[in-house]
Image (cartoon, rainbow, N blue to C red; front, side, top):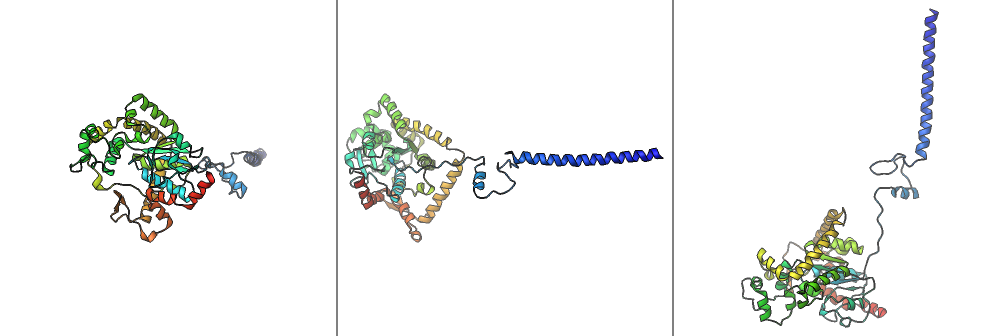
Length: 400
């Protein structure tokens, strides 16, 4: 009996010792783990947010906590405001011009404007074509002349332009400028198709008329290359390389909104800076049905422009690819804002007016605010306002 009691007593002592040992081990472990977490960056990290989750920091501690996120902070950039825009023909350039004019006018920037009208010159740019001074922006029609442009622009000026596939640009030029008249094709059912059936014949038959230079390779003509030079393959290759070196952004009419996103990124602008209502959209009467065959013929006729376009299309698409993962999201944001602007400033359900061979949207009279007023102004109207602005003249006197 004593032996049995001793066994039970021994078992009880062993069990009690085990309990005491376990309890002591837990206390030591808790203290040790607490010390590790207190002195380590591993404290309570949420794998999704990479933030400490033990408590909400306050004050300067909160700012420090935000900086530990996996998403790097945005690098602040300064808006760029010194720009030459080479305004090409029938490429969506009037809309781009009005965007740039609105931006500059609202910020009291100076413009190299024509002395009259809205075209500086149909020839190479020359500093004598504008008033003496150093300008922030040059955006009106003129042929490219880098040396003379640099003579009137700020040293850090960026050069941009927009181009269009020759298969559609040439038809747009032909229709908008009504070139069927000097070619005596106004009675043809499809004047453009007739012209493209033998374009050299018509140019030889009518050697002198306005805008004749834009009936073959109009893009290169705006870039400063004359017609004989355009057919010199060596000179053409050199010119394309020169343009690539000298221009900071060449946009594409076929990718208009993507072009504006690249412009916004290049210039560090805000969303409102790139909003627009389309300008210079020609009327239906000045449009022609163009078959795929005629488009192909147009491209061959403008083979030098086609080479230029194809070269810069590849560069453009690479820029779009390198834009980053936010491209589709930013496109949707821009399209939403453009739609919002259209309904705020115009009456899209009403037939537009026709002015200067182009459609003009009906203004929404219930929203006659300054935002909509500037949004609706054409590049011609803006040019007149800028040229007559006292701020423009005062700024020029200071910069002379």
